Image (cartoon, rainbow, N blue to C red; front, side, top):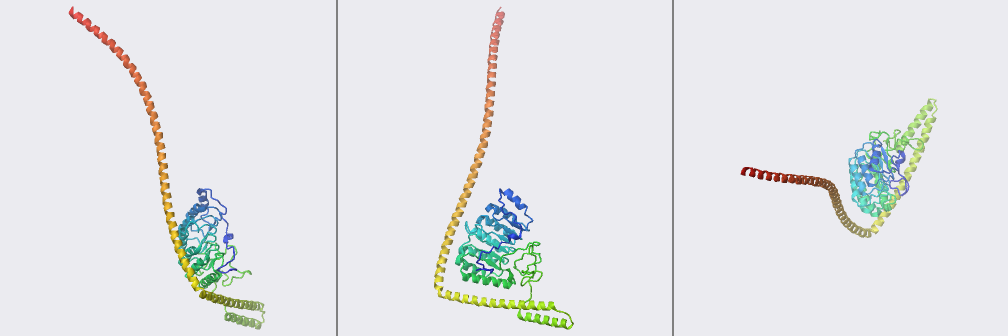
Length: 463
C-alpha cells in the first residue's frame, strides 16, 4: 500500500541516520584491537553508525561488549555487516543488560541464515528489553511462519517497542497471518513496515486497523511512519515525560519543534511540542466563532478596529471547512473499508473448506519442518561436539609436540655434557694409566733393590 500509512507497501527510505554524524561508516576493523580502540572513543556518543563496515560476527561480539554497559548510546546502526545468527546472539546478550538504547538498525544482514536459534535469542532479548522503541530488520531473509512467529512472540511480550521495520523479508501469506494473530494481542506498536513481504492485501488491511487502534488508544495519532529519535539532551528527561506511554519521541535537534510547513505546531500538538488535550469538533468551533464575533462587535462599539479578529474568524472558518472535508474523506474511507471487509468475509465463507485443507497441509509441512529442523539441530550439535573434541585433541598434540621439542633440546644438552665428561674422563684415564705404568716401573726397581739388599743382608749374617 502506498502513502505514509502504518503498513506501507512503497519503498520509503525511513532512515534517520542523516540526523546525526555517521561515526564509523566505512570503518573496516583491521584487527579487534584497532576496532576496540575505535569503540572506546565512542563511549560518550549518543549515536553510532557502523553501516557497511564489514565487521561480521566477530565485530558484532566487540559491539555487544561495547553496548552492554553503555548508558549514553541511543541509536546503533549495523546495516550491511554480514551479521548472521551467531553475531546476533552476541547482540542479544548485550540487549539484556543495556538500559539506554532506543533504536537498533540491523537491516541488510543475514539474521535468517544459520538456523532460527540466534534470531529467537534476539527476539527474546528484545521482548524483555524495557527501553528499545525502534527495531529495523529489513532485508534479513526472515521467512515464513516460523520467522513471523518469533517476531509475534516478541510483540506479544513487549510493552515498549513502537516501531518495527520488516520490509523485504519473505514472510509470505502464512507468515502474515501468524504476525496478525500475535499483533492483535499487542497494544503499543504504532508502525510496522511490511513492504515486499508477500503478505495478502486483506491481512495488511487488518494489520493497519490494529496499528491504528493502538495509536488512537495511546493518543499517538501522529506517530505512524519512520521512527524519529530525539537527541536533544539524552535520556528520558528531555521534556517528554508527559507523553503517553509508548509514544515514540520526535526529532528536535535539527528542525526545532515539530511544526508544519508554515511554522505552526503540527496537528494535535501544542506550541511546545507536547500532545494537546483539546477536542476538535463543530460545536467547539461554533463556540469559538460566537466568542470571536462578540469580541469583534464589542471592539467596534468601543470605536476600535478589529482586523485581527476578522483574520481569526477567517482562519477558523477555513480550518473548519478543512476539517469537514477530512471528515467526509474519513467517512468515505470507512465505507470503502467496510465494502472491502464484507467482500473479504464473503470470500472467506466461499473458500473456507479450501482454507482448512491448506491449513492442514501447512500444519503438516510445519511439523515436518520442525522435525527436519530438530534433526539438523542434533547434527549441528554433534558436529559442534566433534569439532570441540578435535580442537582439544589438536591442542593436546601441539602441547605434546612442544613438550617433546623441549625435552629433545634438554636431552641434546645433557648428551653434549656427557660427551664432554667422557672426553675428560678418557684424558684423565690416560693420564692415570701413564702414572700407573711409571709407578709400576719405580716399584719394580724398588723391589729389585730390596731383593739385592736382602741378599746382601743374608750374606753378612752368614759371615
